Image (cartoon, rainbow, N blue to C red):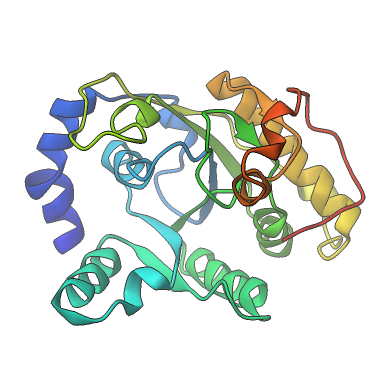
Length: 243
């Protein structure tokens, strides 16, 4: 109930006023049954505008820190993220990848929509970064087609260094589902998972028009901007399989 109250009453109208959003390709999202969504990640509001524009409820895997903060504020955040479809995942332990895999598979087994951000973190500069292979593993193990979605303009609503949101125009572009049934039985093969991930990232690049950088966004943040000089390039299969 709270999910739809936030969507249509408490937050939705304000989000529509700020972002004047529109969605393209909505017909590519099935009206029922399980589907796996792969989206680029430009800003925190991606997780608000995507559910706003898709009639079906969408579930996300979120870092557990959103659910463990102490005090009244922490309890409110836990309640808010839980009611808005966020599923907590502990990303610090050795079993983080396995926990995420199990949680994601459970959502799909229940016939729901699951959205993952293959970049693993928000883009630090508006470019599209190398995808991690966890999403590919879930797709291959469940046999679920992947629907690529590009969020366009969400990074302009609240750029780094600003406090108040800035009215802009947001577009949600939904691509045709990607079928990886040709790789049936190959989940766990790091070369196959990398090839699947790169195909997904290529689809996102074409949908959103972002430049692609063949390094992980997290490495750019951790290296203090050392990866900023990486040249845009098309995704290619590589022998690494960071999850």
